[in-house]
Image 1 (cartoon, helix red, strand yellow):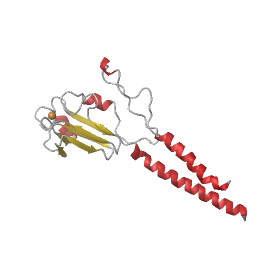
Image 2 (cartoon, protein in one colour; image 1 turned 90 degrees about the vertical axis):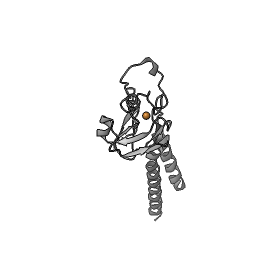
Image 3 (spheres, helix red, strand yellow; image 1 turned 30 degrees about the vertical axis):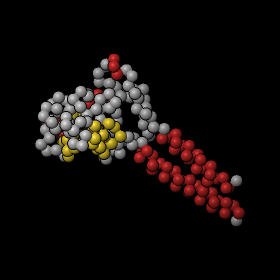
Image 4 (cartoon, helix red, strand yellow; image 1 turned 120 degrees about the horizontal axis):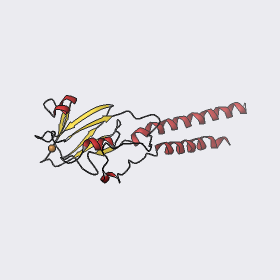
Length: 187
Ligand SMILES: [Cu+2]
């Protein structure tokens, strides 16, 4: 009888631990969402920034956001189709922004295309293609071969590395604590 009751308590404790762990894990993706200011830190949404290079050094996942920061007198932001991106045409635009501080949510996996709608700006390179890729289940792989630069310029030697998310360590620590608290009353 005593063994059976003890077994029941252990099972409940284990179930509670699993539930708490599930909650912790469910919150992990949201915690790692990132807001990127387009072109920053070296540039912004302007005529000088190399957006191909900027994009190549970053990985975008669902839940991330883009912020386009610019002078409203000088630029705007138009989301276009692939065809519009390639032709620098905003004739069939998906949406347009002109607040000077526009936030765009990257909600799903896929490719998004943005350009400046002012005459000549897109042709001068003011357009950006964002590939939104699924977050890998095993977490970010911060290997030494990450983000190869298309062009080797000496000025890019001191690029700040994207911050590594210690989510896995936090989750592991939480799990240990949860299990400790759950099993403590049994001793
Ligand atoms: Cu412009």
